[in-house]
Each structure stands twice: as structure tokens, then as C-alpha cells.
Length: 68
Image (tube, rainbow, N blue to C red; front, side, top):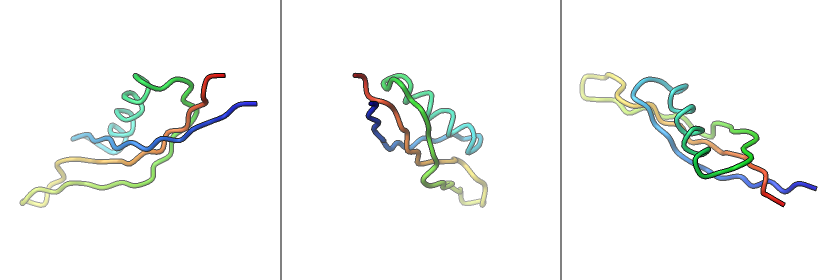
């Protein structure tokens, strides 16, 4: 029987939500093994004084299976 755990992370990118998601998963893979899924809990953008988006942020929940 496998046991899984969920951890929550935030990631950001100046390019897009997609790039922020990829950055978050890439960073999670550096310290977590057996990552099986991820889902987006929340999305937000930072906006400058001119109304332009300067940063895309995502809050991810990463599911990974614990080693036996």
C-alpha cells in the first residue's frame, strides 16, 4: 500500500501562469521524489502603476508518494 503526502508551494514568473506552474514543479522536483500530481489552488497577478501585469503567481498543491 502506498502513502501519499500533499505539500503547498507558491511560484511566480514574469511571463505567464503556465511558466509559474512549470517553475514551481521544477523547483519541487529538486527536493521531492515520486511527484504524482499538482493542482492550482490559487492564481494572482501583480500590477504596476500603469496597469501592466508584472508578475504571475500560482499557489500549487503537489502530491507525492512517500518511500516505503
